[in-house]
Image (cartoon, rainbow, N blue to C red; front, top):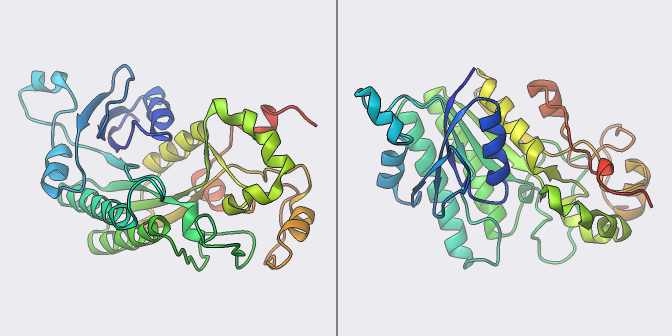
Amino acid sequence: MSKRIVFTGGSGKAGRHVVPYLLDKGHEVFNLDLVPLNHPGVNTLITDLTDSGQTFNALSMHFDFKGLETGKGPAPVDAVVHFAAVPRILIRPDNTTFQANVASTYNVIEAAVKLGIRKVIIASSETTYGVCFAEGDKDFHTFPLEEDYDVDPMDSYGLSKVVNEKTARAFAMRTGADIYALRIGNVIEPHEYDRFPAFVADPPSRKRNAWSYIDARDLGQIVHLCVEKDGLGYQVFNAVNDTITANEPTRDFLKRWAPNTPVHRELGEYEAPIANKKIREVLGFKEEHNWRNYVPKT
């Protein structure tokens, strides 16, 4: 069923692939961002989401000029997908990164639920698992990394994502809305698969990403599935592809390259260390873009 979706951050690395996927599924998308998205059929409203007034206003507007034709005011919004953020550390000062990510997420969720929008999907991150932007060489607590992991980032970006998950949970409990947080792995665009031979040849270089990734187009599928799946309340989902970025079976690989981290359950032969079992079982995710289909065997 076609949904009216407000998408924040649609002009970013992930958004510019997720938005077209949603359009292909028949949804109508309105992009809120600081820079336009150059894609047919998508209007971008330049919006500073750290300003609560702008956020409330943006979530209650016409998507484009066609909306004026009804004479009935803006049509209802079915879902909000919130990807807008300072996307990592070392782009802006740490306090600005934290403040922008936390305030924008609070403003988006608050505006959505107070405007009667019952589905919100927010971008959390693999950085919540604490290793990606850690100081020094930090080990993961246990493998695989699943949604009940004791997240413990030490950086401003990862910390902002943990706070955003708590914000989402608070609003879901308060309002009964469905609010799903996606712990998005290292986003890979189609043209970036030429990097994988170097990943495989240098395993330590991928430890911070837990030897996992998400194809930007498969992320589109995950967001679509979240839009379609109602009644789950507050949920956290790992948003990653199925398999490890290594040629060696996962258990043997982890014994070699992460010997200090225990494995708490049986692993699939090439299962990604950031496990996507929950999105496969709960949402019905089926990856379409396994990296092995794009990288010549060596």
